[in-house]
Amino acid sequence: MSVRRVLLIGAGGFGRVHLNELVRLTDAGLLELAAVSDVRLTESAAALIAERGIRHYGDYRDMLAETAADIVVVSTPIPLHAPMSIDALEAGFHVLLEKPPGALLQDVDRIAETVSRTGKLCAVNFFAPSRKAQSLIAHAIASGEIGRVSRFKAIALLQRTAAYYGRTPWAGKLTANGNVVLDGAFHNPAAHLLYSMLKLAETAAAAVGRESQPVSVAAEMYHANPIESDDTTAMRIEMSDGTTLCYYVTLCAREPETQRIRIEGAEGAIEWDYGDQVKIWRYGLGKSYDCAEGGIVERRYRNLIQTLDGVEGGLDVSLASARRFTLVANGAFESAGEIREIPSAFVRLSGAADQPGAYIEGIETALKEAFAEGKLLSEAGLPWAARPEPFDLREYRFFPQRFRMIEA
Ligand SMILES: NC(=O)c1ccc[n+]([C@@H]2O[C@H](COP(=O)([O-])OP(=O)(O)OC[C@H]3O[C@@H](n4cnc5c(N)ncnc54)[C@H](O)[C@@H]3O)[C@@H](O)[C@H]2O)c1
Image (cartoon, rainbow, N blue to C red; front, side, top):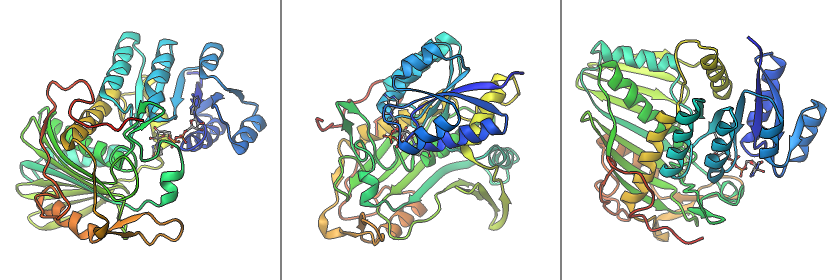
């Protein structure tokens, strides 16, 4: 089998992680980085690719037209995901697309339509529980270790500084340059956690021979930072198999914690965290398992190449699986209707050393209590919280319907 040739679109920001990894994996003989496109290549990225003799293109379409390769990695701002992926698929490449696959469900559906028409693969670089963690959890659920599963809950207590919102023009924005970006807490830094919970719900249902699809979502979205989008969100998702998914995120914590997901069953519970550590409790007795499998970006490249080579197992994160994220994320905005500002009386500075962001007084305890009880923040009695309207996802295809966008 010849070494797969790879093209990279977007080599700055998170694209720099891809660039470094692609160079490293070229040296390791797994693949070959054939060319790079970026409209504003940084000096250090330019130096690296020049030193390696890798060609640079300002316009990615020229790169697609002129370079023979198998895979295109797309790591550009979110509104560019659909046009770039579609162009790459149409030109005969397979795609590894950065998360989220698009801001809009209709964009993800356009990519999906191109995937099915061209027969090419589109993998998405969402972080998800490792294969080891997923099979351990699936086995525990299938063998009845925690009894019938009723609820999944996810919590992210994160801290972001003012510098985070200043790092790129679309940070914290609902729209940028006339495009919808929806760059908020669950659409960007804690997107992996929402995706991971949806993935575990998919894995858990399959373990007992069921299918489970999101049916409705109720979401409350707030900001304490001076941004357009959310920095603090709670949501509840009802699934077609009767299970409920609860999700909590804030970027306004003073004491950040490892993101984690809890699966509750009639006889026990399972916890998974971002370090791929899994703990399974049955009738109060717990056992821990280390399910870490190494760097995520390398795993996504290896998985796509193995899938192309016909190795069993399929894509770790297919576009169809990632679509559930966008379905729920867009529906969450529709349910919230708007992003509510948390009154300044409840907001302090985060205490981060450099350019602190907003801290919401007592947010860690408030989110942990809501998480423990599976309540939305309005149900937990927070004075600034407002009850949302659940939003039906079953025939949902087009954003926005109820959400009040701010004009760019
Ligand atoms: N997987 C993760 O953990 C992770 C972490 C951070 C960001 N991301 C994702 O990575 C993607 C990029 O985010 P970012 O913060 O790096 O964005 P960014 O705004 O920093 O842009 C990334 C790069 O794309 C380049 N670019 C912009 N327009 C281009 C064009 N037309 N042609 C070629 N290059 C172009 C920019 O010059 C820049 O170098 C987003 O989808 C984001 O959600 C993923």
